[in-house]
Amino acid sequence: MDTQLKKGLLDICVLSELERKESYGYAIIQDLKPLIEISESTLYPILKRLLTKKAIVSKSRIHNNRVRKYYQITEIGKEEIAGFVDDWGQVEKIFEFIKGAGIDG
Image (cartoon, rainbow, N blue to C red; front, side, top):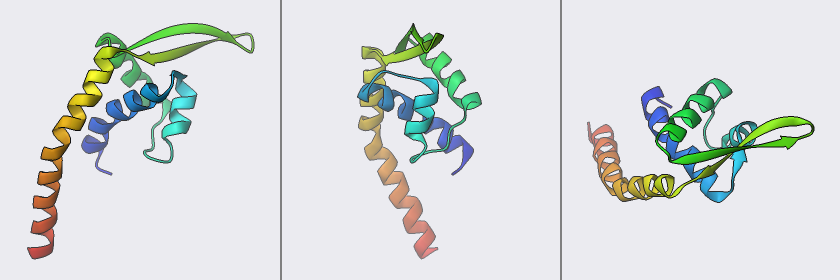
């Protein structure tokens, strides 16, 4: 998948995973693996960006005598997903245009 296209979808994928349940970094990577390949070096800047935008919040918990940071979606994050879904109709039109050009061209 094209890097720019993938980058645009990653934030929404992370938000969607966190809408399903709160989670931590490694689990997010594992849960998204069947859909889209994401590494720790890609995920953590996304989480930081989403924290800055207040789309998610984090809290630390002790797990097996280690501190683990859990992330949870906020209303702002849910609004981002809703905006993405609303925009998807336009993306589908563009896809159909490109697909038609590829077949006929």
